[in-house]
Each structure stands twice: as structure tokens, then as C-alpha cells.
Image: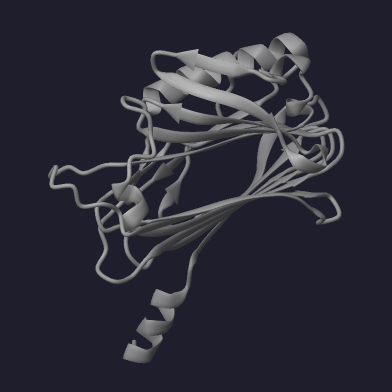
Length: 272
């Protein structure tokens, strides 16, 4: 194999695809999968024996995001499907030496479908440089709960911050009209300044899109516990709601999501 060919292989991003469909009985199943490194999955799980929702955990064979990674995942939910997609642990974004890592997630939620996309937080190590994008395309009569969270981590305790971090969540309708673009970028200088509440070091955004954002109980909601402080605001173009603020970490995120989903279940029928 030539050196030139090796260089071409290095430039090829990791592209993975998951497609879900609904059976004649209404049960969601994984109809198609194309997984490349670092992703790996096992079989679809069910919350209960009679659940029609497909629960799937994305596992990473690598140790997190490293310099040069260009990871892309496309997930499509067919009409009327119900999917809960998680990962096995928080994702480390490792220190880098002049390069960067990027991660692009595309979520297509077709008519009548329901998606819970709940990855655990990104952990930003000193000197890391990462660019992350989540693009959600929503059809009418669909609903989605999208979790987006991160925090910095300095194992040596010397105060060295991440180099750069950018994060964008975009929401489109079925005609590819942009409804929401929530974008942020943080430099090393920004990380040095305190921008989190003491003890609540993880920034968190929970996007409640389409039918997931229609609950009247969400309007003006302030979610405060010793491990979380979030407030709910309305998204533009009637896209839904966003619950944003600070949490103590992955365990606090799990508790918050359990309570938020319970709140949604009280206000509408969601699949379990």
C-alpha cells in the first residue's frame, strides 16, 4: 500500500448510519445499520416486555475524541417509530497538539416519530480542541428530546484550560427550513474565567422539540435542586422549548432527565 493511499485513508471521516422502522404491529426495530469506528452497538433493548420503543446504546471502541477525529453519525426514524438513543459513558475529548477533533450528528425524525437522544456529557481535557454539531430535522407531528452537555476536566490540577470548544445545535423542519440555530464557542481565555456555578460544573441544554415542547407545565419552568439549576425558555419559530443551565455531572443529568421525561409523560402520552 502506497504512502499516498495511506494519507487518503487517514482523511476519510468515520461515517455511521442507523435507520429505524416500525413493524406492522407497531414495534420499532433497527432496519439498517452501517457502523464504523469508533461506534459499536449490541441488540435493541425494550424497557418492558410490551414496549414498542427501541432502546439502543452507542458504544465507543476508542477512548474518546482525539486529534484528527472526524466522526459523523446519521440517525433516521421512520414514520411512527419510537427510539431512545444513549451512549455508555461520558466522552473524553483528549489533549491535542495543534490539531482538532470534530463530531457531527444528524437526526431525522419523520412524521409521528418520537426520539430521545440522550448522550452523556463531553469531558474537555486541557489543550483539547473540538467542534461539535447536532442537526435535527423534524417532520410534523413528531417529537424529540435532545440532550447537549459538557464540562472541563483538569486531572493534573495545574489550571491549564481546553484550547477551544465549539458547539452548535440546529433544528430544521421537513422542508429543510432552519428553525433554530443554537451556537457557542469557547476559547482558552473564556475557560479561565468562571462561567459555571460552584459545584455545578457541567453546562447542559435539553431541547424539547415538536410535540415534546408543547406541555404547558414547561412554560417558565425553573428546575432547581442541590445538583441542578436550569430554566426553561421558548425556542423561536414554534420549534419547542429549551431547558438550560448547570448540573453537577453525569449522575445529575440522569436524574434531571428522569424527572423531565416524567413531566412530559404526565402531560402527553409518550412511548416507553
